[in-house]
Length: 446
Image (cartoon, rainbow, N blue to C red; front, side, top):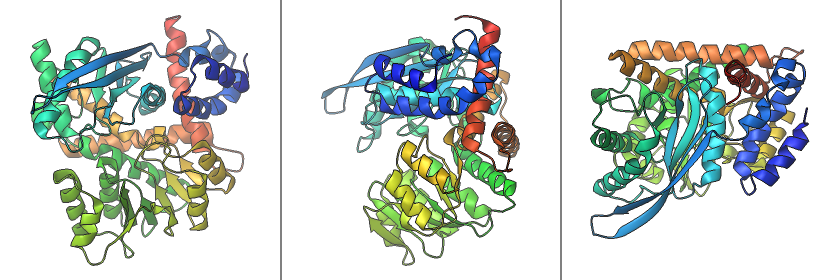
């Protein structure tokens, strides 16, 4: 059996210039390899080697024309990583920084995240280097139609079911769904994150943020603590961050920050429902900046070009993007008293930041467990579409809470240490791996 060093060295040679993918693999395999060595069945059929290679990678050109008649060319990708547990499932991201490395790492992570939910979903991810910021709604629609024209041949309700991600919200999902319906002539569950009127699930918008808080609650309870009055710093100001804050306030936590590319919004006495209403208006409706929120409230400050990690806190929730927290940020955060971290974004800590915080005894809930609430409700949306039903928000939320409790239990089962502490990173990685690996063993080579 190969060592972790052998696998990572081989990965550098066969998949060069893909640092995010390498980081994601190292995170999973460092936890999984000792477990695999103790279980002979998992050493068979080259499972670890097979999981390094996606089932397929689809790359395509997207040519579209804006309202002024200017022709643009963007790149599109869909990485279908593994479907041992079900149809590929994972979001679409529209952002100018993305490349194949981005989607390989996200699809790899998605495979294990989806497995943790217990729902029948494989892992995939995709998107484009298109930037929706600053574009008119009409131009965004034109791009979505052109993108779906190229993607539609490779997706379907029993084949691959994309959803939203960064840069792809309810508006973009609506345009993509309309384009698919026109191309295929079918109204089906090919996309999740749809509006309820078009077959979407109630509670999908809130699911990732709410699920983050439900998992955080279980982490705290595992350590005989509660969320009430905990000082929380949150990064980001998108869908995940906003609904994380909403649920934190409902649980009587004190939320001190949000952030965007311009800097950090600071509420020294904690954000309120009135603040959150303004944040939603500025970020979701006006698509503006947090600086405008601070200008609307005298009790808020905006710290330009600063991150939230210098604010004293008990809990940190990075909810912006991958590798947003480096080792220096981690040291600052530790100096400011952090005890728990819940990764609401995908892989938001660099490897060095993670190692440093673990050495300091900080409890880290990894993203594949913490932010699985979004894809969990996407899975529930698939079920509703298949049954031709629509469940009320309360029913969906109850199921979401049950799923997050199940994920937490799985992490504890595989991550509990001799001293009673829980290594959530190890627990999540092993629990996800076992689910996928068992299915692959059952299905034989493929």
